Image 1 (tube, one colour):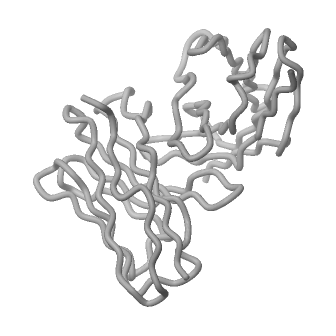
Image 2 (tube, chains in turn blue, yellow; image 1 turned 60 degrees about the horizontal axis):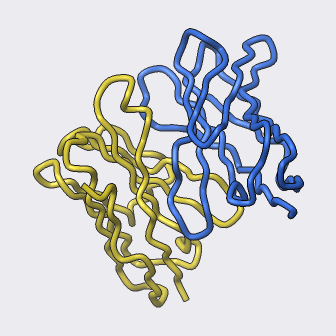
Image 3 (cartoon, chains in turn red, purple; image 1 turned 180 degrees about the vertical axis):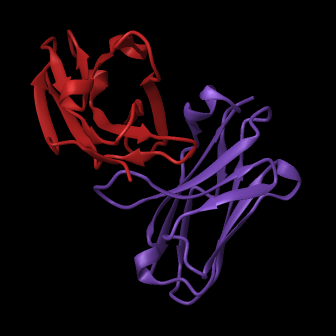
Length: 113
Length: 115
């Protein structure tokens, strides 16, 4: 069975600083990988996804993520964080023919002015 | 289309009562999913439908839980004899077939509080 680990429960960055959120997955083959963002009291919004091909994927809101098979990682990055990026971020993995996603426990991002 | 709609947004119920939640997916999406999210955790898969067929159920979905999707449109999730441990956010999502089926669109969720 697949699993996802987000090692950082809470991260605080200053507005304008760069951001990297870590995600490690466990799965025997090439997984499908996702990053979602959730604002308080809201559902989850898909930021980006990786299925195959170029290991650097671009998403919405200026986010990107890089798939590194050797490290079983799919870290999310943004060069310059905005106050509106404060939210909870979830990494997820889908595998095989199942449509169910396995989510990590999330990283809460705070942005300091 | 305004996206995935869930009703009600909040539900407070007494332990032992039955509750039912509704999800209206994006109209052209034939796949529908239910997830549960507790505080401080990521969503956990409960079940999913392709059209009206329920194709997969998680072990989290005990006998007190039942989900339906009549006619492949909206879906309902019923919890019978609610327990305090059922308190959570219940999220619905929908998607298309194919690789795009992994790119869910989530609703805003129904927050259940069992007192």
